[in-house]
Image (cartoon, rainbow, N blue to C red; front, side):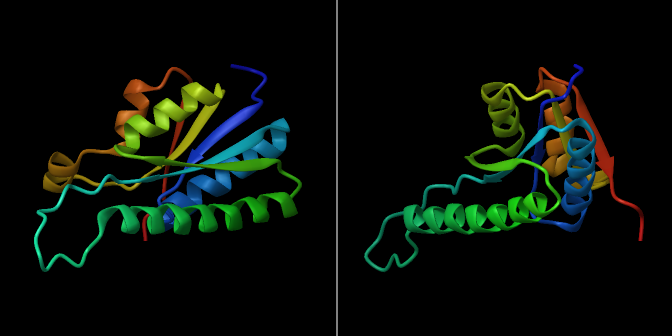
Length: 149
């Protein structure tokens, strides 16, 4: 694992993800590693076609990708100000699987991912992206839990 040269940090732009991002930035600064900041846009389910259909899925997904890219570039800019080399990637589909796929393609040494602390029925229904990444990743994964409010 050492030396760490590339760290992947997924984000959903939430407060817990910001904590994970800060830790990834700090670790990368210590190791002189590059940060790959990743956001995954969820796939939209297909909609019924009809004469009154106003919602265009491809256009909406394109807008989501563009918005994600813009927000990621802002995050990379903050890293550049700290002297940390960084770049972005936007994935599409199942977040856990996409994060692992991108990590493999980019040959990252470490994934730093925030947990959102879901429990009970919410965890059963929606699962955990962090849990899926831990199970599927071929590199070490550092999970970061946000401080309780």
